[in-house]
Length: 282
Image (cartoon, rainbow, N blue to C red):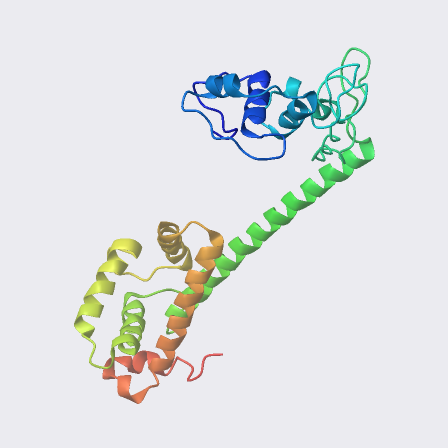
């Protein structure tokens, strides 16, 4: 045990004082404890003075708070280290100040607008600010609409340019043979001069007669434009995306036209168109 008492003996302030007196002979010499516990020691102990009892009480720190004697006793109450004080000394110490309150995240916000009569809140902004906000929203919507109109116009321009690039003989219409010959050159640029021209011819002949004219007759720009609109919408309905797709188609058509003047790609069936295709496309 921390206080050295026997678990079978009394554990009170008087018993502890008796134990101290019994184990110390006034001069500091210890007396062996009896095997019977504190009760036997107390019976064999000589009479002790109040000073010895007080010294024992001062050294036994396991006393209850009400019996603690940290300092000299006061006649006015239990000894607490301060003459005339009541209760233990630690009970009369001042409490530490409370920690400062955490700052509120809403401390810097403005107070809510005053309430009008009838409980309705006052308007949060002036008519001038509301007008400015509405004007800004209207300007943004107008800018968005203008940008979409420009993209749609650009798509139409690219479709028209693609039609003109396919019109190899410049007669204002798109012929079946023109579509086939231009795509033969593009296929050769992609896969080499040994490309299977028969497969390319069959593919674009079927496309022309399925999408443009079932009899293989020349078609105007309006028919070609309707076909390209269906193709582009099937890929992506975004005008910005369609613009990028058409730019790629236009560049391939330009390269195909230049291939008519490349000697390694030339054939006898190119003669009706080669003379009408400019050598360099600007």
